[in-house]
Length: 246
Image: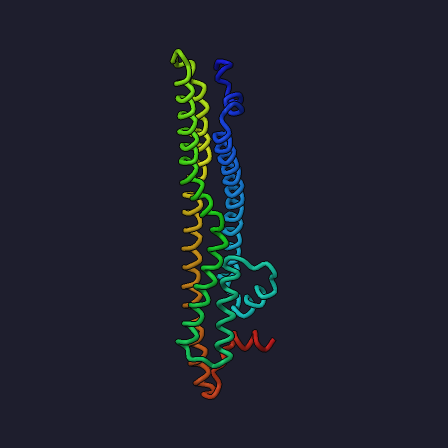
């Protein structure tokens, strides 16, 4: 590459506005990579925690004991937190002797709220990636247009119009477009990847919520039927009694 077209020299000799555009694009690129690494670690950790909790949940352990174990965890997250808020509502409504349908409706609402909150935490940063991916090329294009405009304005002031006279100005302008694409492409790819990955986690968690609701519904029906046979005046479920009694 000729010395007159050295990239570093083109950047340092660019107009102030083009340099500001390049600096913004560099910051946007650094920010997107920080978000990419953080989201990659967060999603990987969330998937592992969910798998561990599901293994524990389906191990056949009593839900009351499982709840007590989760209750003592100071850093609940993912399925663990979703189960905690759902079963807490289950215990609370059973304590008040609410009808079965009301209990299940209350648990479903709490599970949806817990699922939504965990998903918001999981997807934190996706909006920024989407913004960088969509805006960065236009910011780079703005710097390119401005640089080319300055190049042609300078060309109009020379006596002899040659390609060599306008080439440095156009080259420095095109660097802004390249930096815009450099910032946008990883952000768009990462956004699509993390959106699909978080979507799969959401579907898995939503399925868990449905399965948990079904389990609580069956448990409530079976326990109340047994209680009515043995003692019509008592309808408190065993799981709720075990937790509340402790």
